[in-house]
Structures are given as structure tokens and as C-alpha cells.
Length: 111
Image (cartoon, rainbow, N blue to C red):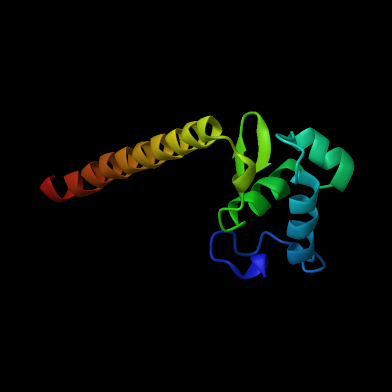
């Protein structure tokens, strides 16, 4: 069940069937191209944050971008390359922030 994953502990309502919601989202996205969060909320009733969580916990089956959400296996090579590049940029930015905060943290030892 998605709610049992470590990335977002405690964010799901107890009465939510996240596995069923993931299937609903996957079925909705199938052969529909990019769908915006607004469209998903209108059709499925999922708030943007919940859709982002479902996509993040989809084990790679759903990709998201400023365009919206799409099934990974339906992405074109160009869409995949763009998505992968954005993800790598986020990883690099996070690593840079971590490195900077570590330097600040350890600077107190020199003081």
C-alpha cells in the first residue's frame, strides 16, 4: 500500500484506499497524454498535493512536470529526456544545498 512507504509517512487519511486511488489515476491517465492537476481534480476529486504524492509513490509509473502528469511508458523519448534532465537537476541542487549546510554546520567546530 502506498501509505506504508517511508517518503510520506502520516500524510494519508486513514479512510483513503491509496492503492485504489493509484489505479484510478493510472486508468485516467492511460492514452490521454499530459493531464493537468486541475483536470485530475475535476474528474477524480484528487487535490494537487495528493496527486503529486501518488505520482511520487508510483514506483516510476507516473511522471510529473509543469505540463501535468503522464504515464511513464507513454512518454516520448523527448519527454523522457526532459523529465530525466529536470530530475537530475533537482538531485544536483539538493546535493549542493546539503554540501553548503554541512560546511556551515561544521564551521562551528572551528569557532
